[in-house]
Image (cartoon, rainbow, N blue to C red; front, side, top):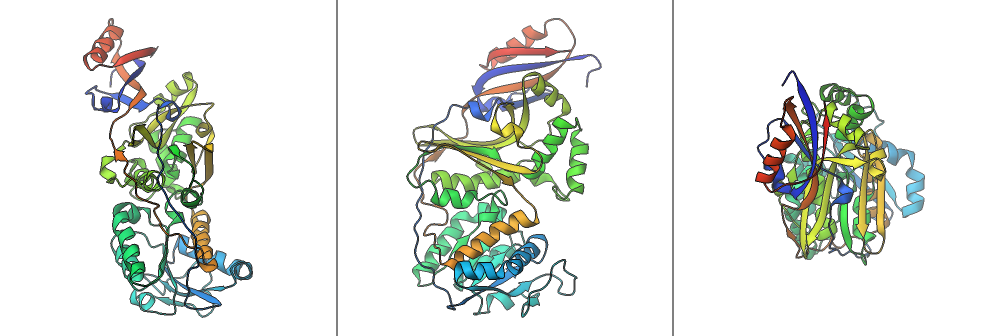
Amino acid sequence: RFKNTVGMMIMCRSLFVLSSLAITNAFVTPLSHGKLAFAGVRNRASSSSTLKMSSDDTMRIGIFGGGVVGGGIVEILQKNAVAFENLTGKKIEVGKICVRDASKPRDFEIPPNCEVVTDYDAILNDDTLDVVVEVMGGTTDAKKIMYDAIKKGKSIVTANKALIAASLVEIEKLVEDTNAAGKDVEFRYEAAVCGGIPIIRSLQSDFPGDDITKLSGIINGCTNYMLTAMDQKAQSYDDALADASKLGYAEADPTLDVGGFDARSKLKILMRLAYGLDVEEEEISVRGITEVTKVDFEYAKMLGGTIKLIGCAQKVGDNKIAAYVSPTYVTNDDSLASVNGATNAIEIESSNLVSSTYIGQGAGRYPTANSCINDIVALAKGDKTQLPFNQKGDAKFVNDFDSVFFMRIGYRDALGITRQCGEICEKFGVSIHSILQNP
């Protein structure tokens, strides 16, 4: 840190690899998700038929996880039991709930004739259960549970984005092989991306004749809450994180959220649905919000905007897709600039619909449970999605793209600052559009 410093904001145009420049105490962020020059591609497929159930008038489910989301699912099912039966023609019963400690008091009422168990096999080996709902989280036990349930012919409803992102190809093949062997298994995961926003269903069914050119948005509630607090309340990063933790938006270890990794997992799933593209998570460039400070928001306000953590995937050429997760400068007239708190939002640009925006709660007991309920009700109605992750395409992933970037540099107050910055940018082939110097 320098005692006498001036702040300098440089707007420049270069490749994404600009972030590798060795500039001390610099903050680099894409200018605006709305100004990246991308086109798009679409590869998807979905069809409907009747899903077979083991009972004509009842669908029984087993839930793994009796915590926040699991309890919300039970509450919604109980509250709307008659309405769901009228809608689907079936009674939806919770047969068993698997938890770590069966003696632990629950903040929801256990349904009549529902058994609380601790043994995974009590659900997996119960042939009277049609659907397994997995809301326990994790990628080890949850993976084994889901795989075993699929092999036994039970449909899956899950909110586990981390597991899906890590094992999407395996899950897809397992479902395909199981159904080819004569079973009728559905894999549903609406709650895995953006909580209560029905973005998965939309990408599966609303764009069959369209051509998606870009998808981008705020897909992590914790970081959006923090950035909103830093912007509107002038809070420091540490204070904003502390408040997010108190409100339950941040985990005990917030690394997945603040590091951008949670958003990256969601973006990977969305990329497969939108473009038919399978890509390793590690290939997607990610930069979290840990280096964002109040000073960045001061500059953003002077420029007429704010900063949001954006996940973005777009076409950068013929059959090429680029993606990133990064703090991004967003102008005040952009629709994402007004999405505050823990709210999520996704914008989809496409040839036919032009622009579609989805906004809603990205996490929490009832928003997440509601998405699980939607999947459960769809199964009870007999809805079927032939390809849970849409059709594979031949698009290729590339890890660089052209964009406008902002660099904030802390400089000791002296003569020749502008010249030195110009020389550095010239050395690395960066064209400077403008400089904002603030003492």
